[in-house]
Image 1 (spheres, one colour):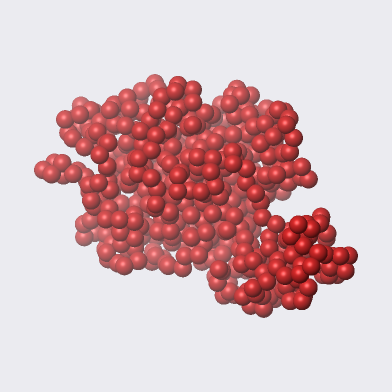
Image 2: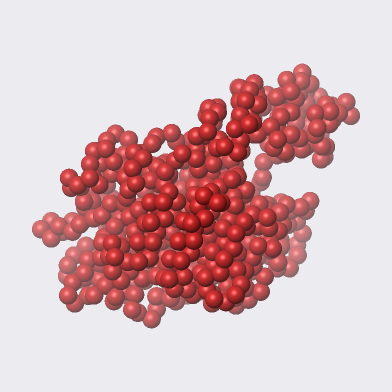
Length: 578
């Protein structure tokens, strides 16, 4: 249940003029037994789709009660003595108090069993019921461009700039449009009379800032990305940019303290922009006997930003059976040994917006989505509006959308406070051991949910929105910790020194709110939490150890200098796990 506070911190300047009306309406029907809880918090001007149940089979007189309040009749639901209507939220209180009305509930979406977009898994349906849609929040999508003519995105792209030199801000590769749809697609093309699923993004009313850095083949350069980050910072006030999404990366070749790409994201963070980065798709890489550990890409290795791994939703509407994707890159980061990813989100077989004639769609039939996936009928015709991709690139925008909702609710939050809340409230009851199969090669991978695969846990948007704890406002208090190897005991543990980062007043210190047991859900210094029994590189005698922890015979470039790393990432993007 949402907090009924009505101030600039919780609503933002745009809605201050509506504050008194909203508060009075909320208080008036907030505890009504005749109205579903997930109708609370709607703005009076919102048009809501509802089912109204009457105390008897409705007649024209009953329908007229809704019409007289500005409603529209959609269709009769005689089985439940009711009807489906669309009406202004401002009329809900009055209608609920009508003696002929038995109950009012949202006309909630019904998910098909085969629909694996991950939105149910992260409680987006609950979060959206509070009325938060990301309105007024700017999200910079630094990617391969956005096809802004897509009906689901049209009108949301408020600024576009090309950094590739190709002379277009549209999406010739197909990646950025898919990402943008996950963040803020409004579902227009799948909201039709014969549609039974609507593909909405996490925050359907965000403003998208399209900064194109990847060319038609999906490649870019550090300088492109850095220039785009710089532009996002300069446009922060103009478009209220609170979030940057970076579903991209490359190998780690030096410490984050000197890497220009990580330094750029740190500047954005310090400028007050929440930076979300995909962890990478190299979790299947065991070419150096490291079981995919140590494969976090840059700039996801930076301790300031929030780094996101990918989960499989298993095609069900419950999250207790969800599992880590085999391709999701694992920590610790190379060289600096930063604990990454910070959390995980759905990223496997995600359906989102399609850029027509884009390279990914044209090359890979695996990505094509039949119309029957969301529209009634047995047609095998391929959708011209949506397609399916997998990877941590799809998981990151889930978190970006969640952050937009959090900033809409409380604009005064800092990037560190948002990161802390997301990590603290992350769902932690994940299966410890799972398997995943590559549908193309048939190879089965054994995975485990440890601190370097799932971080603090599984994104829970509803829990994050309802959390009111605040980490200190200082920049850097939510920096991801590092780990160290003890050659005497053979164990790896979180660093817990006396520096300012680990002081008792900050997130990773010993305070009740932000202690490690709260963030990670258990005693994170225990060996079993860090590893589990299947990790084979906890010894200095094997090659996996040398690759991750470094030695004179295993330079840092060894992992990223191999020819098969791109194959791992590209296969995951179009095929995913089964």
